[in-house]
Length: 382
Ligand code: HEC
Image 1 (cartoon, rainbow, N blue to C red):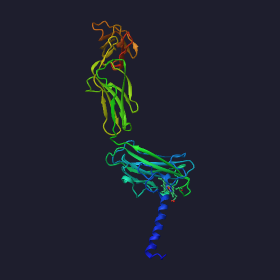
Image 2 (cartoon, rainbow, N blue to C red):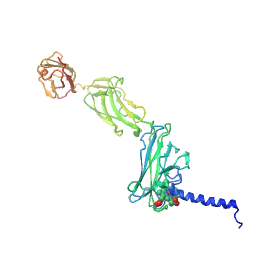
Image 3 (cartoon, rainbow, N blue to C red):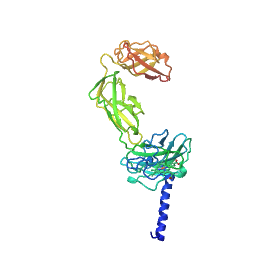
């Protein structure tokens, strides 16, 4: 065998150096492409194969700081934590991908315990991972790395963070280590939030005081901030706050049993308004329906009151013969001997219990037990 020329010797030395540096690179940070994301080469168990599959050990890998809905272009600090009792050496690798598997946003290290692998993968995907000095435990049997993610500058749809962690036994080999993998997602700002009313109500006649189940369905739950239900008595022109039926910040609640209000109308409309964490609210409107009293049961309602010396007068509708005015819950001597008794009640002495400038709660109760909504009455200063 001819002796190696000077140039070949140099090449051989370079080859050895290269191989050494690749092997050394294992501990100084994994090769690109082992987060277990679709399109990756796999996960760390490709080499750390004592336990052939990930997530079989008593530890975990987790991510915190990922926004449930990201703002395009905004910078976030994410925390990757690997934890397992009695382990003191840890490692990780993470990539951020859109739903087609391409790189989503920009990953960067914020300290010497992590690094972005210079090698990128499928779709330009970046890999951020531990450095050699970033493998020591920082917590009790755990390590947390703070890393930076800048969200894509425009809405890139849902972003998935794929990551793998190694709870290593610190023997400087790829044996005896437990590998964990996980995925966390961050929703797109326009993550389609939709709402539709299951109860269309078109042409329905509802009786005041009866119960009616309103139900709806939503999509994009992770991007929902709140759900509010109101009704209108003017074909949906206005939905006043006093016509609020329901409010929740729990998007998994999708129905409410509505005690139909005593607001007779042939122009009723129900609205379900869904507020998003980001972006404009979306709504669903019912068709037009009617609210009536059911003939027998008509619920009294107070529209106004006046006091004059000892006397108190109460105005409204659906006052039955024998209706009684209640003042802060106490029944008052009540006369309904007016020529229009369903709209006018008179109390000869209740007025002296209301000092000028004070506010009381009035209700009217019919002999059948139905009561009006409370009415706040402030007696003017005389
Ligand atoms: C291509 C093979 C290979 C892959 C894939 C790989 N490693 Fe390693 N890793 C090694 C080898 C080999 C070592 C031993 C040290 C050395 O040779 O540098 C090692 C060592 C380590 C150590 C120190 C272990 C100890 O007990 O001291 C950590 C931590 C580590 N790797 C983390 C990871 C993580 C996290 C992943 C997945 C994201 C990963 N490795 C993927 C080959 C690999």
